[in-house]
Image (cartoon, rainbow, N blue to C red; front, side, top):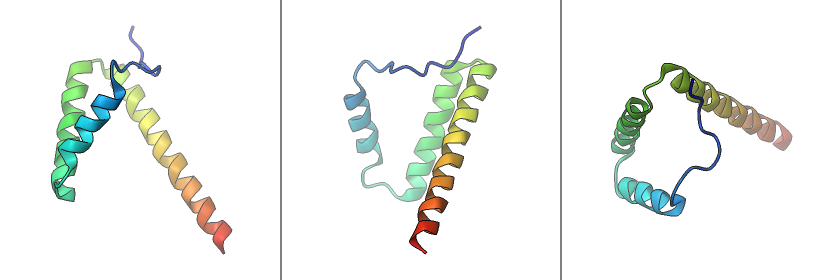
Length: 79
């Protein structure tokens, strides 16, 4: 059974980041959201395994919840 690869696995992370940011440059927020949605679906299709996809979704959701909690904590410290 496969697991989600969490170790760095990019052959050239800087090139990927540059290409991704170039793709979004001069796009509207709505266009960028559509690009991201398509990219997610393309990569999910490439992965294919439901358990791996569910693991990725769970980790992504946890990161979002953690960021939101940290943001609330920082706002409370300001008051």
